[in-house]
Length: 211
Image (cartoon, rainbow, N blue to C red):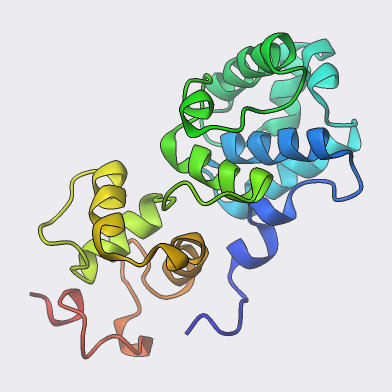
């Protein structure tokens, strides 16, 4: 069902939001920034905000020199944009002071940054550093895993889902499951009114049978 790679995440996900021609340190910063913008926000909106930021030359220094109202205008209408202006400024200052403008290369240091949650940190490790630190679980992955009953018991939070999935899913599949399930959640297994009739899992899926 995901073989077409034609969901929004496939064209506009974090892997497609940074400047490939930028120096490695700047690329990693742009990866982290796109992840910070992406929470509670559609991929299309995040990609638009990143495009506007990159047109200004998106680096730690350029963000720290930008006033809050300009930054807010550029990232609007991402979800919770006012909070994200604050978090982006705070995180950028920390990166400049402690990491020489780079992003940390460990999960613990990434989640310690303002506005960076576990899902963003796992994706940043994968995309920016090429390291699989864990499964990135967002609302799509959390919802679908519970609908398919891929955990022993229903999970209440994305972090609980991540731990339950990592118990049994082979590690070599950890890096691809996020993109596969996010796209599936965008196209087929929608939050409301999932398209069960078009889904090849319908015979196997407890949620499709209303169980």
